[in-house]
Image (cartoon, rainbow, N blue to C red):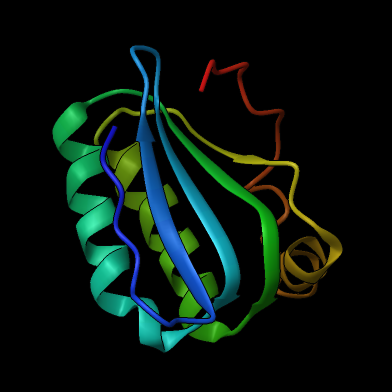
Length: 115
């Protein structure tokens, strides 16, 4: 298991590596302050070449930079032939996705992953 978080932050991204998938856990406030973490997560997920699960269940706020990270991870992951799924997004995430017309991009249930 590998994890990346910022000390004293109000949001973050951690990664759980399972034999079946790379799970990116996003929590708190997802904004531009997490750009470096997002890049690290993207690189690690692509390096593993396994399905990617975006766990946004603990997100309390997401801005355009946070949505851009989700779009980037989804787009690049799929271009590389990986399955990318959004797992049980809270209303703060799903409403923004719906408003932006991205529901189809993030549609479909996430696979069961043991973590």
